[in-house]
Length: 131
Image (cartoon, rainbow, N blue to C red; front, side, top):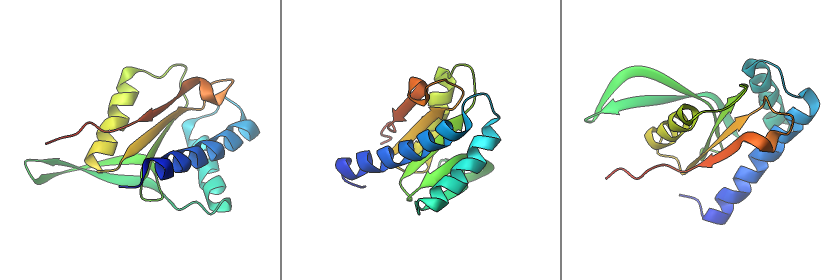
């Protein structure tokens, strides 16, 4: 697991890319537009990422064969889930936490692009520990 400072720095780098996309496009578009723009922005910034990162649901050590997908995995460390909704709910956070837990990654960012100011609805999430 990366050091906390490195994780914080990576999260800030991801947020900066999201802010640039939001600054250029503004709120009110479909999530798919922000997703495509982030692919361009991450590529231009040379930030390693996987788009539509596959996550496997496992129960009692068995893969359930259900294909879950996080919007992005950035630098093999942070799950990024993006939304374009009027208000994010506890369900959005729960899904992001589940993704980061199942993927065994240290953190997730959940960002809602449908706000006048991107930082109005942005969450850093950390997985619950499963023993």
